[in-house]
Amino acid sequence: MNNIMVTGGAGFIGSNFIRYVFNNTDFKGNIINYDKLTYAGNLESLKDIESKYKKRYFFVKGDISDYKKVIETFKKYKIDSVVHFAAESHVDRSILGPEDFIKTNINGTFILLKAALESAKNGSFYRFHHVSTDEVYGSLGPKGYFYETTPYDPRSPYSASKASSDHLVRAYYHTYGLNVTISNCSNNYGPYQFPEKLIPLSILNAVEGKDIPVYGDGKNVRDWLYVQDHCSAVWLVLKNGENGKTYNIGGESEKKNIEVVKKICDILEELYPSSENPNLSGKKYKDLIKFVKDRPGHDRRYAINCDKIKKELGWKQKYDFDDGIKQTVKWYLDNKEWINNIKSGEYKKWIKKNYINR
Ligand code: NAD
Ligand code: DAU
Image 1: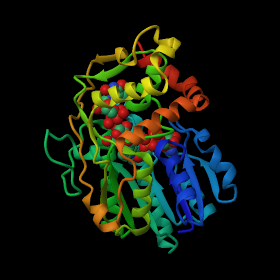
Image 2: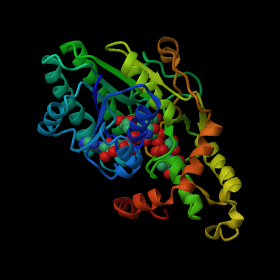
Image 3: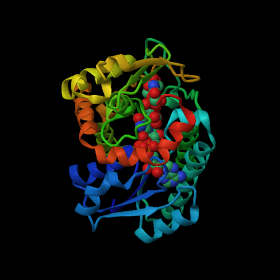
């Protein structure tokens, strides 16, 4: 691998992945970040990388659904591998309007596969790694786990679009022999996550003295993984994963949403006591927790079995939830400029349009 195209590199996981590869691996080649810069894309998340790796990091603004631009980028940068993160990623948005999810997640993935196959025909392509989600497997009851062999059962327009893209990637392997790998990962958290997702939303709302919205009874379970651990897993699969295979990645750290939110409040009390926060007017952070109307079709529980990647590729998580969440809260307290910029534009308008009291 010399020239890796990272799609969606300006998003949460993509930007962490680019930083991880440059700073934590022996990779000596170039990374081409191909991103449309939707509301979720933010080049400020890569300012350090842009200046530190001027000769090896390149940004191309483009839509993955635009074949002409994609193939032009493949040719210009002699792309030999793709790590495909670009997607519409937020379940609530997919419920409010699925169109962009279909266009980007399904059609966009198809266009990338088509370009990769074109390059492979010319003998200059190594691997297409597709980053997917545990949500394709549906919802679990109180027991059991998702395995790589669990049948797909997506429930939201987001997870249905990701499931479709996974099937397309597999089809390109079986039908055309394209070298592909797929990973299905559980909920990520950590620095640079867009503040519409539960963890950053809870931290930022608490600090601003706003309600912390918890859907339904707060007992839905997610399996949380620190973003750097996801990045190390994707890197291993890209390098050493078996052609045509799928790898589950998970935190083995199941938490009810209400536990997560209460934990955030406890950490905030320690790092920035509510008594010193003028936005709290005498309240404690936990007083802000508010149970609100449930998400339609809200999956009850996700839990990943990730024995395969551990056994076959020697991966394991480095961060446990208590350390990771504390670092994350601290990061959001320390990075006001990034937060103010991201919250000032389109996001502010969207929140106003779609939610009351946020
Ligand atoms: P994100 O929403 O933070 O970032 C998505 C990025 O993709 C943004 O930079 C955006 O500008 C870009 N993008 C969107 N549409 C595009 C298009 N048409 N063309 C080019 N770029 C486009 O998402 P994330 O949370 O970083 O998720 C990244 C990937 O990981 C997604 O594929 C998601 O399904 C998957 N995933 C996420 C999680 C999670 O917990 N966040 C867990 C498992 C899998
Ligand atoms: O499981 C992997 C998936 O995790 C990824 O594929 C998605 O891209 C990513 O967005 C994430 O999906 P979730 O829907 O699980 O994440 P979200 O942060 O939106 O919600 C986490 C849980 O918290 C979920 O049970 C819904 C709940 N929630 C969410 C929000 C935004 C609340 O209770 N209140 C909220 O305000």
